[in-house]
Amino acid sequence: MSNKMWGGRFSAQPDAVMAEINASIDVDRKLFRQDISASQAHAEMLAKQGIISAQDAKKIVHGLDTILSEIAAGKFKFKRALEDIHMNVEARLADLIGPAAGRLHTARSRNDQVATDFKLWVRDALDALDAMLAGYQRALAEKALAQAATVMPGFTHLQTAQPVTFGHHLLAYVEMAARDRGRFADARRRLNESPLGAAALAGTSFRLDRAMTAKKLGFDRPAANSLDAVSDRDFALEALSAAAITAVHLSRFAEEIVIWTSSLVGFLRLSDKFTTGSSIMPQKRNPDAAELVRAKAGKLIGALDALLIVMKGLPLAYQKDLQEDKAGTIEALGDLELCLAAMTGMVRDMVPDAARMKAAAGAGYATATDLADWLVRTLNIPFRDAHHLTGRIVAAAEQRGVALDSLPLAAMQAVEPRITREVFRVLSVERSVASRTSLGGTAPKNVAAQARRWLKRLGRA
Image (cartoon, rainbow, N blue to C red; front, side, top):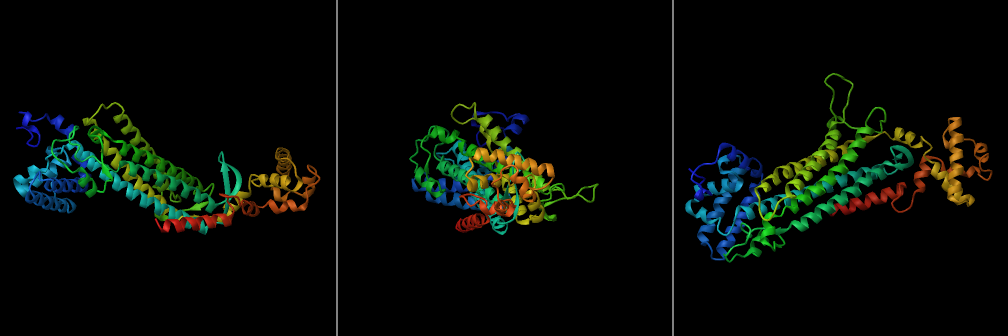
């Protein structure tokens, strides 16, 4: 017995292995809301155009509402023999309303149907991610405002470079998240064309109103080329690309959290909410949430790579390879939502050790650049010469085993006689950060103002 949905050409059932590899219902069942919405819009358009009767369209729409309720309530029985979400819904619709269900697929193919459903799902996911990124930014900006004057070491090459503030460091991730949101917004704008009505690949001879279905589904316009409409997966690739970059940003911060919460560094503490213990070492507090965010970035990058590899060899138009577009995308974007929730929670939960941060900020002669700048400003020494003189002064402090602001004035004057006691005004870490008032600089007043600007902006998001 052949498949009643498509089997008129076939006289026998597919092999069990063929049935197994061909089924996608375990994945695309997640598209049920989008599939039903698109089908309802299609039925209403068919009726408006006189292609099916208004009575049949009403039955179809009502039946689809019933199916939506059944799935949402967990009462719907998905059947692997029916392959995918589209056939499962259509078969159940036939059970509910009889022959009228057979009119729903008029002027439509599973090719444009799945492209429409998947676009709608990705669009919904992008909207959810944008909201979560905004929440993450708010948490960062709030913490940055509270820690605008908390001094910590800034690093290059993971070596102490110059003092910065913790608030300034957090605001760097606000900026990254803003670019992430911009990429998602760009991807959403480009995906927002409706494939519905492109049919299998060539369009249809029925007089459709594709603009009507596009509008009902919230698309900006119908896709202009039927071949492209059914075979395009750029929207998923762009979403995954933006997601992978976002995951990299989250992973970089997660790496810092892992380092900063270690007993060797001790800049931050996370509560029991975002740490776990050891099965054998009772003293341990492990930053597992941050570590898992770091690991999931690899999965997101892998999902992007996988879909790029699927797409690279596909001629137009639809190929069954495209069945493999959804599993990785759905899992990856779901993982990103989880990562954002975890990172937002950790930002709100983290407590900095201000004293330890300040002490570390002064280590490694971090205010050496401030000394060089003072020589340039006060003594009118060319920067390259000031850089050399400062290096000699740092070497003198290192030989004595003292910080720059503890080196005797006489030792500095032995290198450059014109140095006065005023130099000590720039050698503390507090004065160093306070002096960095240039646009984008780490001065506490800059950080507080920028954090407030972000919070005001995000309040309107």
